[in-house]
Image (cartoon, rainbow, N blue to C red; front, side, top):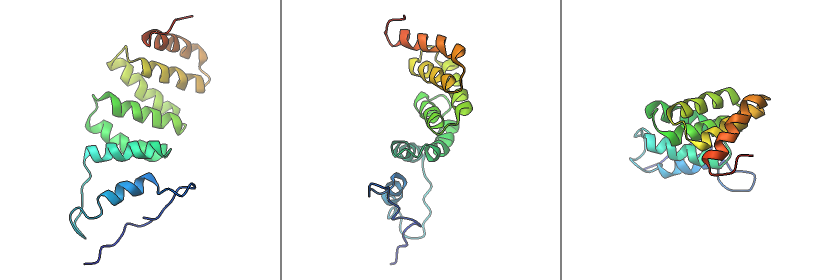
Length: 145
């Protein structure tokens, strides 16, 4: 039996390590045999998105996380990671949208307040950011000064 390897299987990072998405592909290389399609589960997309995020492929992570968030819109962790991926890939309006959704659902989610404040600051909207950053500090138990 001949098993074809995925295209670009040997893509490496500058430090010589295989790219994160290559590891995820390799995990399923022999699951069902050659030629059998493998449908990725939500959990698989989540794991791959986390690996891409850790590898600083923020755009790649965001693409996967959009599907995860659509499938599980009430889950905080995927939406927060999606917002972070958008933030790090300079998609600030998209990050803002996800963070506002999180805060609407959970008004005391301190990290969402912090991230939204930082996102607004990065857009030059300092007056809007200041109260969010103060709230984040208060929710985290830090003094408000």
